[in-house]
Image (cartoon, rainbow, N blue to C red; front, side, top):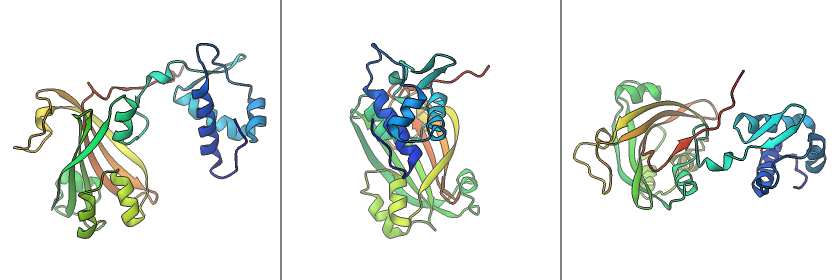
Length: 249
């Protein structure tokens, strides 16, 4: 580990600690150095260190045992997809051991249905851009995603670029408008695969009569403006979500 520059301090401390944790042979030892020693090595205050350790403990990456010290949870490496992290699907697919690919099936302008309009705080029937995408894991379709953005945010010229864009809608939004997505609010449900794709649309290899995880999310920018509404349908036979949770007694 090396000393931390005091720019984005907490993020840098976390990155340095995570790199150190991943370098450990947990079959040999999983105890972290004492807090005083970590502060000395990293060149930071105990307040900053404890803030980062609190976050890691809340996520189940480390375990703090009173009177004994701080230990790395040996099971955290078994988790590829976490529910508490909004990671882009290509990264989730790759971390689950597959080759990722994304294809845009359809982009169109349409009147916002009631749920979409309410999520984006638009007038009923306001026009939105709708993008339908499929994410593949080793050429197996594993995620269907519907993205909705107000036509007041993207121009038609921008949407022409989006048709050939292979990265996240959030990166595209930032590049075109300067809006940076900061957080989202998610609702979780389940749905049968038969009810996901538009009537008459076929995707090769898409399973029939299979339960999918359904996430609907409103994504907010740094000014807390509703910017993107997304419906995501996930084949959990491929992307297996799991979570380490800290029990509260």
